[in-house]
Image (cartoon, rainbow, N blue to C red):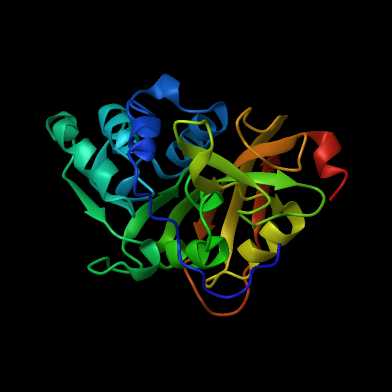
Length: 260
C-alpha cells in the first residue's frame, strides 16, 4: 500500500463524528469478538493493562470498559477531534482509574512520554485515517519494553488501498444525501502490514492476531467485496539490539492464510 508523503490526518468539522461515537464501545458487549480476544490474550500474558494510551479514543468508551472490568494503573486517551473529547466530559465520573483525555494528532502530540505505556491501543483509528504507517510507528514509540500495541485493521491478500478518493466511509451528509465529510477506508495488503510490523524498532517479540472475513460497511465506498477484519497485538522486545526472533499466533481464516 503506497502512500505519497505526509498529507495530514483528518480533523472533522461537523458533529457527524460525535454522533457516530456516542454510546460506542461503552460496554464489553459493544466490542468486536476480535477485540475481546485481544484483551483476554494480553490479560493471560501480563495480568494487567497497566498504563494505557488510547490513540483515537473517541468518547473514552475503551477506557470506561477496561477500567470497569480490569485493573488499570492509568488511562490516557488521545483524539484529534475536539468535539468528541468535549462530549466525553460527562462520562468522567464513571472512570474507575486515573484518566486524562487530550485533543491532538498523535503525530504532533506533546506531553506524552515515549516508552512508558504498558498497553497502547488504536482501535478504529489508524485504518480510518491518512498517515497510517507513520501512526503505527509513532504508537510503537510509546510502548514500554515488554508492553503491547493493539491495532485494528482491514486486511486483504491482494492489493491494499490508502486513497480517500477511491475508498472512504461517509461521516456526515448534506440535506441532499451527499457526503460532506469522509473517513479514509484503509485496507492493508496483509504481507505489507506484516513487513511494517517487522520493521518496528525494537523488534516485536510476540505477534498475536485474530480476524474473520466480512463485507465492508454498507455505507462504505470501496472496491472490495469482502475483507478480513482483524486485530493484531504486538509485544515489544525488551532489547533493541539486533533482530529478535518473533513468536506468532495468528487466528485468521485458513483460505486467507493460504493466499499470503
